[in-house]
Amino acid sequence: MNTDTIAAISTAYGTAGISVIRVSGPEAITKINQIFKGKDLTGVSSHTIHYGHLRDKKNTIIDEVMVSVLRAPKSFTTEDMVEISTHGGILITQKALEVILDQGIRLANPGEFSERAYLNGRIDLVEADSIMDLIHAKNEKAIEVANLGIQKHTSQLIKDLRSKLLTLIAKIEVNIDYPEYDEAEVMTKEIIKPEVEDLLKEMEIILKESYKTQLITQGVKTAIIGRPNVGKSSLLNALLNEEKAIVTDIAGTTRDLVEATIHIGGIMLNLMDTAGIRTTDDFVEKIGVERSVKALNEAELVLLVLDQSDELTDEDFKLIEMTKHKSRIIIGNKSDLPTRLKLEHVLPVSSRYKKGLKDLEKEIFKILSLEDLEKRNYHYLANARHIQKVKEAKQALSAVLASIEQAMSVDILAIDLNRSWQLLGEILGEYFQEDLLNELFSKFCLGK
Image (cartoon, rainbow, N blue to C red; front, side):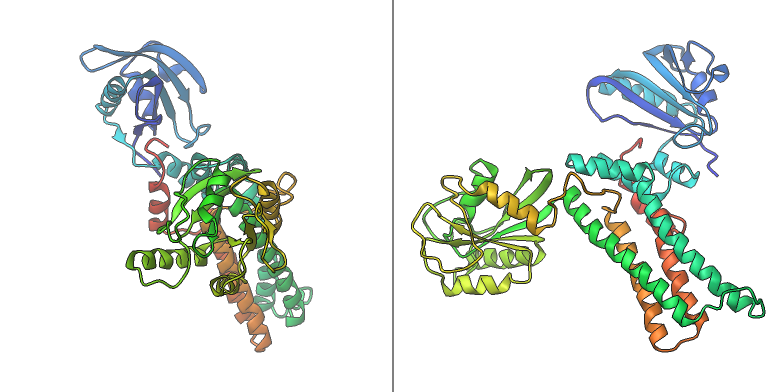
């Protein structure tokens, strides 16, 4: 239980119309009342706003302010809270905070308001993560997904899984603890196996859809790959509609990664224009090629660029082989020139004249299985921590099936079932380690 009162500036540092200082804790209202000249805050109703002046210990007016009073438990932290709106100057805001801290109120740690909300049961860890995701959202879909998390839709997805697991665990425990109880369902391996298989299928769907959601909210790592001088940088510039990368007729002009971001049809591509991949004795170019191969390995989407005005080279064939297991689009650049390329499933594009780019956008959505962008369900996971925990929970369930195949006793199966249930609970924060909380909330802004 928190016994101290904390305060911090909640608005961004800088000059603005107003700044907001947030105060939370058992003495929030009484302490602020001592430096507020206006209505007696100790007697006002919750969720009311009051005009007055903030004064220091010498009774000198610091600023003209509006004070919002929110009484426990109907506040973000479930504690008594006061939010003070001051004029938005840097100096006046800092001075107001100093006067508040002089009342014996402690400066809050980064994310401490949200941490108190979690510890006091106001939000779970999914909601806390979603608040952070909302703050750092890079597109409209990311905002939509984060808001679903804040509204508990994502939490409910995990709770439903845990409920099914708990029902199965409870049936097993009844048979272990009360084998003489005639009405208890006998949990044979024949009964457990299909239920676990159904849960595994459900988790697999969640992970598959969550991966797509993550692509939408965080962007798709997209590597533009090809041998030198096929037009990779020209394609990047055409997609961006600006001269981001240097383009010349000299092979090997791009010697390092050139990164940029574009939004197409509601998704974000994190583009990496790579150095041409080829064997070279040039020391600097060799480093660029190594980075290109690394980018290729990490990419979630590969745009393999070929020069369709030229015949395939050994280097082209090598790149086709290297990328065959990736989500890949083969692009035949320089489609404005006569084609000499003999290869199927090539998308013709002219980076120079910006032709074929709309077809490329459609192909990107198709290969990523994101054609239903406007109709799809966004109640799935997008946070990396959540997805990792579901993967671990799925592994624990897979261990149950392995134990069944090895004819292990039912009580052994219960161990992995419990493990899976607990791992899902870690997503919600029902099981947590202090260092996890410190890591999570330390990433929040001061005053959040």
